[in-house]
Amino acid sequence: MTRQLITSGSPFEGEIGFSRAVRSGNRIEVSGTAPVVDGQTAGVGDCYAQTKAALGIIVKAVEDAGGKASDIIRTRIFLTDMSLWKDAARAHGEIFGEIRPASSFIGTSGLINPEWLVEIEASAQIEG
Image (cartoon, rainbow, N blue to C red; front, side):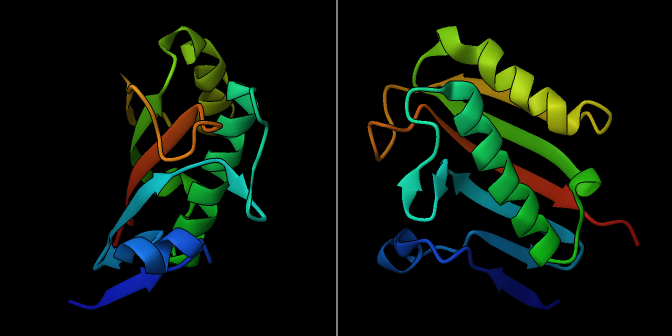
């Protein structure tokens, strides 16, 4: 079974030693994805905008691995403030409303960058 490493160009990939996503066979696992666009936190203070940014990075990683958004079967959404879950849920629903992957919303005390309100992991399964 071949293993394909997908990069997003994040400086954390080399520093920490991880890939944005890994494809093994028909399975794609996407690492915890923060709302970082062009090296900057997207939507500072706005959980909805941050969730949209992180999900956009995730979908691109899945596409770069040969999949598509509809192949995503699981998301895990980590929030530093659970009172913002509806903002994250709205963004998630806009992308996955018809796809409806299994999903979890998990509260956490903090993320690497204090500007980040959300970090998301995803799993995809390509049919065939």
